[in-house]
Length: 121
Image (cartoon, one colour):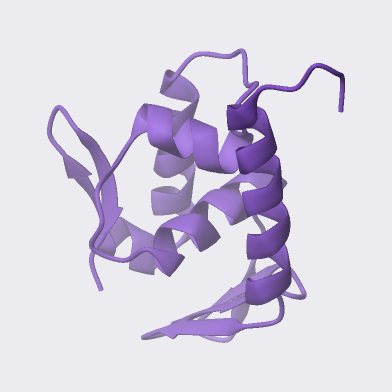
């Protein structure tokens, strides 16, 4: 980290460290879809689904917070990190890809009009 450091950056980095240690190795099952977090794999109907690293991180984050609505900005902050310099529409592209690749996401990953996204479980 570069000094001086802002309190926001410090809190975000410490939070990311704590979250990565406490949640590592937990598998999540949602109907026919399983997320094997430690192996960074998604399996649906006994088939492995190929995801990019950010698609995987986005799916894990949303699935760990079911039925909670997140704005594009919140998802960028939590998944891409605070210093992402791209467009907020990148979230839309990743959501679209998840819906195309995973049947569970196609049915359960919902758009909350003019707010953001949530996964209904």
